[in-house]
Image 1 (cartoon, rainbow, N blue to C red):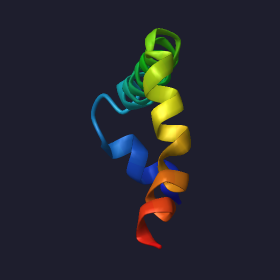
Image 2: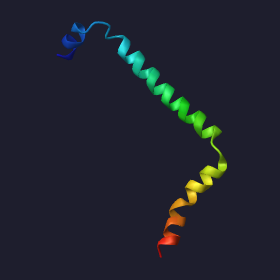
Image 3: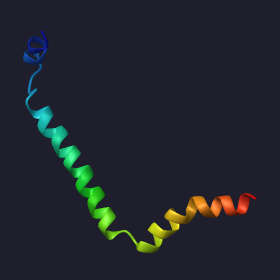
Length: 57
């Protein structure tokens, strides 16, 4: 049933390639960001919930 609809769409074979490129670009960018991120920022974000609770008492 769906094969009929996909046959009617022109250049339907390009969409899986575009989806894969978007997926890979996002995750490669995320990995690069995680490698390059400042360790002070990570520690600040890690301690953030504890610091907020400390001031609310």
